Length: 170
Image (cartoon, rainbow, N blue to C red; front, top):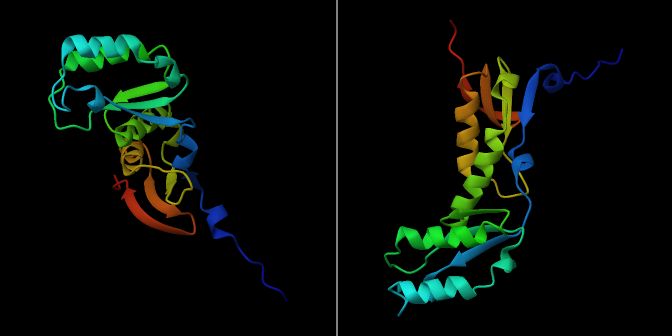
């Protein structure tokens, strides 16, 4: 008599969440304002306003933009605000900060759309391997959001997981 192979993963009731599915498609662009600074160190208001007026903002149409300054200079807050008022009409999304901060903001927006109640008492596996870049931040944020409702959270693949959280018995 032949023995049936049992798929215990399929019977386990595990729900897999792949953060790669949360990845926002689109061209990422960095806008460094350091080249606009006088001698690479000082922001001159008149020159900066002229640059903002003449800059080709259309080049950011539909793009995901990280606005930052690579120079070790003090850039007044209003300068970033001024850029924001110009780029808002073109960019799909933008942040003041690094490319890493942009990725975090994009994942944050996606994670905010997750309806945590749909995962009440669920056994979750947050998939670990992906082909797209998923920042550690996204794993932490999703865990923060789902731990209050999930029965358990694991990391990895359904066939090989690392336990992360298990609700204490009442």
